[in-house]
Image (cartoon, rainbow, N blue to C red; front, side, top):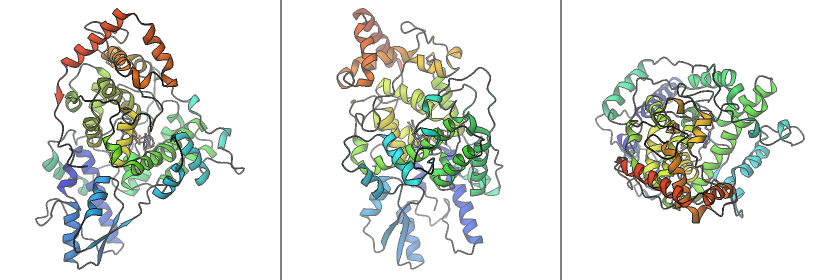
Length: 486
Ligand code: FAD
Ligand code: SF4
């Protein structure tokens, strides 16, 4: 069922809504072809209640159903609504089989552990699934992690493959028009829509990734380009999260490429770690800790979101390009999310709910089970280091090393003070100073606090003033209906 309420509880990117509606309509058609009876509620059906639970119960009544069976929702708010539902009809939750690790298995792994680290969980998952393991139970290639060989900066010349083009059929065209009419005021445009809406299209994206991108995925996983939104990334998160692809088949295809000699181990291991490790890990963390997790704010961040997150109207080239790519494609790759838009929000002290609403709205793959731990935990360190061992804070130097943005920016990345100084620099030192009490004791932050302590008082004061003036000069966006969807 297409319901307005699910499309609006945050202002989802129109491409995300079109992707889901078109995939649903295609799937309904496939089921009908196989002989199933399908009732499909279209968004503009006159009797559509526009609310997921009410619409399901209306139809259950109409078809005189005994009960309603629903895949376990990916968001706590919906799971809670279903749990608390007191109607005449009972709801049964069916386990979501789009993951390797069940809730119970994760809880068992987590039981009795003082600290949760993704790397430990990932090794356990490798053993459990046999993925990237040899016959003696040892990791393929002799090591668990090849990150040391990854993380190359952007080279001068790069031959980046274009994504597969999916031509819009009648269903997709109709949906795009519908979404433009009903959700056209949301951030994001529909012009560049090119997401897979059938399993066949998703499989062709997978093949394209394995053949054309995977061999260089590891090398340029952390690089950022002013021109290329996707680089060597897979663009598979939307299809994986919506169920057009299964995580096991994606990991197995990558592993096979290693056995065939068509992709190196650093690329294959790095890619599989994202899916078998990070994707499963953040989901486990989410369900283990909700709803309290969503209220965490250990750094006491209290600033609204800068308004340019919704407009892209900023002179900071790195931020502008990340936001433009997001608007055009409902996509930015992981390092743009983490080290550009995320890092900036962390340094400014944006409050978790404001930033989480933005990330949940603007990406093709965004659902709370995966968005929240990444934003609140990994980006904002609002859980005090429960998910990641240190904040991913960085000055402009990091962005300059990994991208070609700075040479096209009006700010000077080498400067920290002055009208043309890169804002990331003063914000970085001001952030470290503000949170010294919480962070200076962290072993992994020792070196950087050593530098801060060596800095002369007048320099610290100048940096503080520069950062404060910059923060005062920003416009801020009002929150979007916050609170309603918890
Ligand atoms: P690739 O770089 O090709 O990676 C392969 C796959 O690994 C992805 O498709 C994804 O399924 C998985 N993956 C990689 N990193 C992560 C991660 N940190 N957590 C979970 N899965 C991961 N991912 C989402 O699917 N939905 C979200 O709402 C989401 N929100 C994010 C918010 C922030 C602030 C950050 C820093 C990351 C977020 N991510 C989210 C994780 C990651 O950025 C995206 O999965 C990735 O960019 C999707 O592009 P891709 O398919 O080309 O990924
Ligand atoms: Fe971003 Fe600073 Fe580089 Fe400009 S100079 S692109 S603001 S890091």
